[in-house]
Image 1: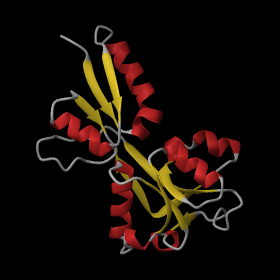
Image 2 (image 1 turned 135 degrees about the vertical axis):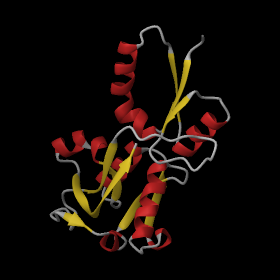
Image 3 (image 1 turned 90 degrees about the vertical axis):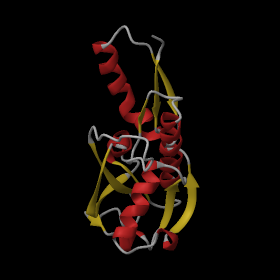
Image 4 (image 1 turned 180 degrees about the horizontal axis):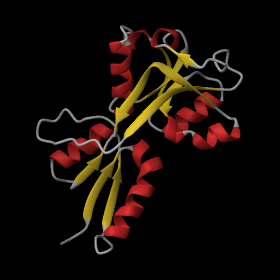
Length: 181
């Protein structure tokens, strides 16, 4: 009775959700889905207050009233321009990344939380990063990196077009950063 209210973080909504919703609609054609796109923190809060029926986020929720289930894994990588001095590296460490001008997601983003934890686990304080900008959109981050304003960490699945076109280079992190979605 009534539509299924779904919330999705920006990265999931832009890149994984069309496929997921297509499969869902095929299996349940009678269900009308309504989508809200926001950062992970906002989506989790809306599920907790029953404004949304289900939320798709990039990092586990710390809300004790919610249950989080992983549906797949996602590899994060560093991106830079092909002209960047690090572009030829096969992999990069958190300490090496901390020396670079860095483009970050905004506070409240699931990706930001995962990346900050990654740095902390490698004994690099997120406060020590040379953050040039904090942006709320993956497209804005990719544009800033393409303009040569710094490097960023993003989901490998979200940069396939830019890699094929040669606009960006992806460098694996060492240790790898794999997050559950």
